[in-house]
Image (cartoon, rainbow, N blue to C red; front, top):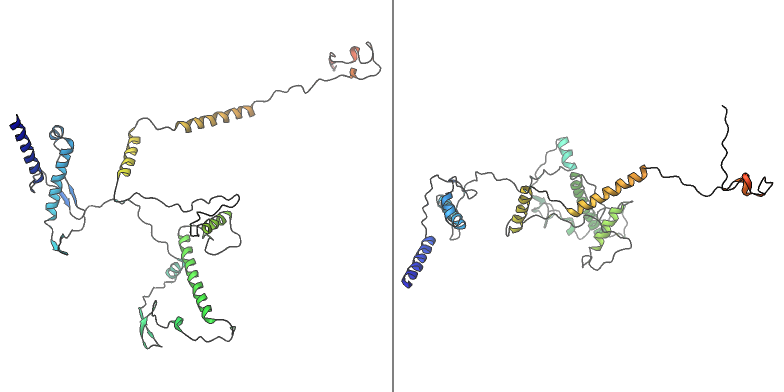
Length: 349
């Protein structure tokens, strides 16, 4: 009994060792189709249903995936290789299988006003050289950027124009003019983006307008609060201040790499909803909707049905007043009272 158990253990160990050291040659009835550019292998062989039912399903699928992967690796070794930093690298060809896009195709960038004007007038854009001749230093220098040619910021002396104030600082004036040009270019860039997206240019932090709307003022307050070092954490709210909508919200996308359990759960929930015959109903929402419908119907019936006209009070006849009465004394008799019957008017026959 003990010898039999030892033999079983040894046989199991040999099988495990054979599983680890499988041959790289795999036989398939139908050859696989390969796309080395995308590292794809398409297996058209029908699965063996008998083996799938007899064996463990996970083991069967793992063995099938191992064989197909081995065939794909064998196909990769047929490609030309090269050595890069002591590592053998295979040169993959161009992919032949077209994969669907996850994101929509990006829309073309809308043209700016200058591009539309140049296209209308037929103005061709000419590429300028990066180097220009500097007359001061007598050498070739860059056209833009650091150590550019004809750099006016390096001048130590500026001539004051005749029409300018002699006490005005020309250096600060030049710096201010440059900042204004930069700000104007930035404003034009943002206007082009807003015009391409068909939205208005907001006045927050750009150019103040005479009359700002309530929404723009709310956005301006929100930006001013979040410009502090604490990002508005310790800033109090103004009386009757409302939080502006659509501020700081960004679209969230699922990660392309890493853990896909959330994506798998979401797709399975969607398939369960599509496959289920019973529709999913929000009971609370349905009950509230039914109650609102009943209240609306009852209110409509009340408005539609006419109300009953009741008597405003007890009517008193002429007999209640003191005066020359008939039988029964003053205020009595058939002249008036609560029991007096109204007389019928006689008409022409």
